[in-house]
Length: 68
Image 1 (cartoon, one colour):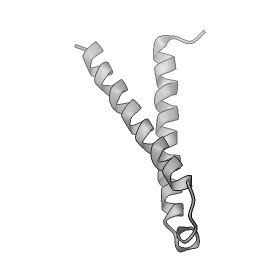
Image 2 (cartoon, one colour; image 1 turned 90 degrees about the vertical axis):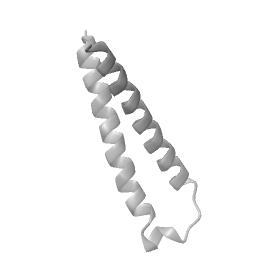
Image 3 (cartoon, rainbow, N blue to C red; image 1 turned 180 degrees about the vertical axis):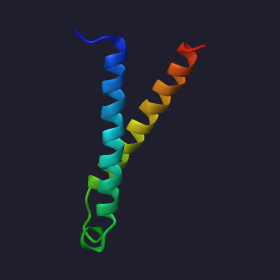
Image 4 (cartoon, rainbow, N blue to C red; image 1 turned 90 degrees about the horizontal axis):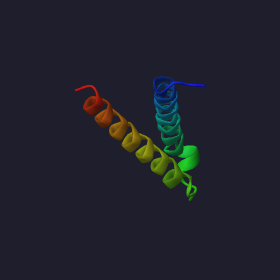
């Protein structure tokens, strides 16, 4: 069984990995080879990126609150 801290570490790592993946995908989607094609993939990547950022912000703000 994982402790609360271990679970938080896993969540942080997953969110950081998601941020890296989304940033990489965003760069690829803006290349000339892909830019001309219409796709909902750009919206999907942007949504994942924004969600990961928001979750990290929430976790960090609560972590600061718990450490007071």
